[in-house]
Image: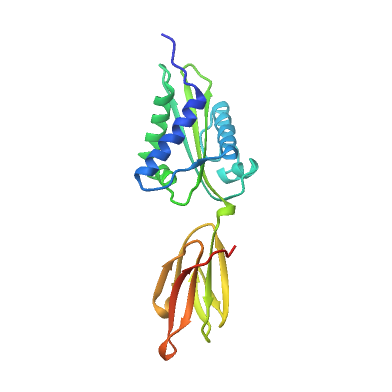
Length: 226
């Protein structure tokens, strides 16, 4: 009986659909398919299939380098790889299920699937030469640089205020403001006031004078700070 050979575009589409269904179960937004990410994923799947290698750096580059070469300017990136072989072959849905279920059951791969700040996805699947049907699946996740986080620290008091963000200490002078842009969210810590906040896109953390020379912090939306 001849081996079953799947329709590759159907496998790729099914992987994206299953990934988004799983993210939805985790109360996460779906990932939008991106042509540049798909091109990078397919090219690398073909490379792995033809070369017989299987690693994230088999071509001497990382996922970020391959994505950039495809014309995608990224802020965050992640990559999952899978390899499946079976003398009986695979139906498209079955191959997609094996790939996604394998990633979900692996903590590191699952972390990429449920990364909360990723917004786009690209998937590539390629057939590898050999006696039995073998397929390489590449799944790319990214957040474009155009969606980097931006927030502001605004000081309306008469005293300089220090705070930490991104592993660095900053000082905002009286009656001034500092705007931060970052690819990764993080914690803003005002140690002097024992106040900590998770940095969020599009917000201003406003320092205001309070009684007895104290300072209070108000968090407000800032319509456009990029």
